Amino acid sequence: MRETDVPMARTTRAIAIPKTPALLATAALILVGLVVLYIKTYEMMPSLLPGYPGDAFFPRLVIGFTAIFTVLILAGGAWRYANRATRAEAAPAASLDWIETSLVAILCFAYIALLDPLGFELTTTGFLAILLAGRLLMPWPRAIPIAFASAAATTVLLYLVFVLWLNVGVPLLFLPRYLG
Image (cartoon, rainbow, N blue to C red; front, side, top):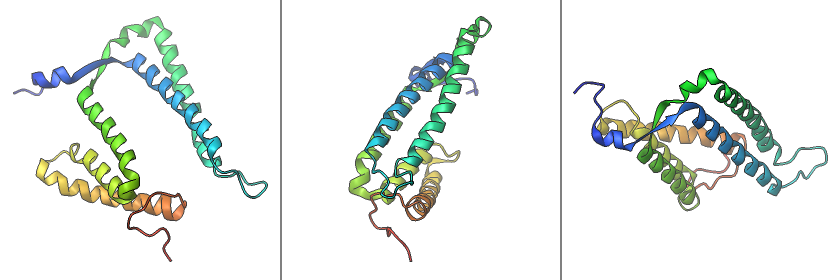
């Protein structure tokens, strides 16, 4: 079988996506999500000390910078789409495997649902290992331990950065909230 031959099952799973409209739709959805997240920051606790920004400062800062760059991407995509010379490039440029995309979305919802009962450590390690195992460029049996080791190392790194260094509250199962 040649590299250009695609099995029939794989082609029926693929959805052809025009590049520029997909970019515009994605940027618009991200902007809607950013607006929702910004509104949610008003539910965060205000600063206890006068002159300090409070809990919502950093999330609003991240949301603001993300919104600026998303608007720039949206404006550039809209300009390219409006340009008649590049409208011919709106032909399908990428394909999306709708089954894999659906499975990743379901996995994300499962991560959210299982975070409290199973804790950050197990849920994050399992989530990352499942995502990574199918994407490693090696035979399946050999990919599993490497995916779990990489996921565990990433979970420990996330724990060190967010829980210990930045003091972000996450539902921990067995790792200590503070060391020392």
